[in-house]
Every structure is written in structure tokens, then in C-alpha cells.
Length: 277
Image 1 (cartoon, helix red, strand yellow):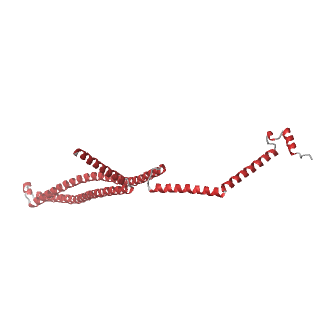
Image 2: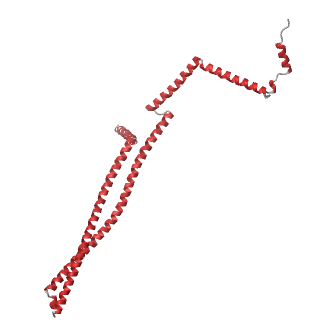
């Protein structure tokens, strides 16, 4: 008993599932549902592409920021190079002056003015190295960013093309579904297997046409119109035939068999002779 009940419940579940699946398929094939589905997909893809655009725009902003930093550092290095050369030039001037005064190299290296120029030169050199290293690092980052941006731009262009193709596919799909449904409906109507309202209306119109033609035929027969028309056709044919025979005789085209024989002519004279008194 429980086994039979279980099979019944499973069968009932299959029935419900089948009906739901059938209804889902029928609803999914509706042109309005298809258009709405494509619209939703297009909206989702458009939103993701916009997010992608935002991310790419941020990468472009980073690239521009790094480029601006490189330009600033490049200007600073020019200034530091000038300061470095100035410190070296002043140190050389101090050394030359002290040498001229007979001061030894050991004393010169301990000279406050010389040490001051040397310290400035070393500071400028260290700062320049830091800035050159930073410029090299930024230029490497910019190179990588530009490569990534190039790839992302290509991908974005492809995504935009795919989006346009999707919009075209949506229109084509809806048109194909509508055309297929109309062709199926017309075929079913012509085959007489359609049970929709349009088929019933078409059949009613066809029946009405046949009924109207039958009524017109009965009316013509009752009014004698058909008989009169046939008589007129017969008279017209006979007239044309007689005229044609007479014309053939006049021009000598009448068949020889049409001429009466001597016996037939004599018989006709006898028949037409008046009776004796």
C-alpha cells in the first residue's frame, strides 16, 4: 500500500513538474518575455561595462598622476644638477684660493668653506640619486600601466561590439519568434487543426461566402436569369454559325457534301409540288 502511495505521489510530482516546465517554456517563448529577457541581460552587461570603464578611468588617472610626478621630479633634478655644479664650482674656487695662499691639502680639506661646499655637493648628489631612482620606478609603473590600459581598451571595445551584437540579436530573435508563430498559426488554420478564435472567425466567413453564393444562385434560377442567359448564348452562337456558313458558301469554301444530290433535289421538288386538282 505504501509503495503504491509512493508511486502515486512521485507520478503526481512528475505531472506537476511537467506542467510547470511546459508553462515555463510557453511563457519563455512569448515575444514580450523574450524582449524583456534580452533587455535585462543588456542592462546587466551595460552596468558591468560601465564598472569596467570606471576602473579603466581610474587606471588612466593613476597614469596621468605618475606622469605629472615624473615631470615634477625631472624639473627638480635639473635644479639639483645646477646646485650640485654650483657647489662643486665654489669648492674648486675655494681650493684654488687656498692653494694660492700656500695652504696644504690637509688644511684645505679641513677648511670650513670647503667642507660646507662638500656637504652641499654630497647632499645634492644623494637627493639626485633618490629622485632619479624614483623617476625610474615611476617610468616603469607608467610603462606597465600603459600596457595594461592598451589591453583593457581592446577588451572594452570588444565588449561594446558584443553588446551591440546582443541588441541586434534581441531584435532578430523577437522577429523570428513572431514570424514563426504567425507561420505556425496560418499553417494550422489552413490545415484545419487550429482551435483559436481567428480560425473560428475565418471558418464563419468562409461559410458565409458559400451561403451567399448559394443564395445568389437560387435567386437567379427563380428569376429565370440563368435560362435567359443560356438562351441568349445559344441564339448568339447560332447567329454566328449561320453567318459563318453563309460566308463560306459565298467564297466557295463550303464542303461538297453540303450540296444536295440530284435525287435529293428531285425529292425536294416532288415534296414542294402542289397537289393536282
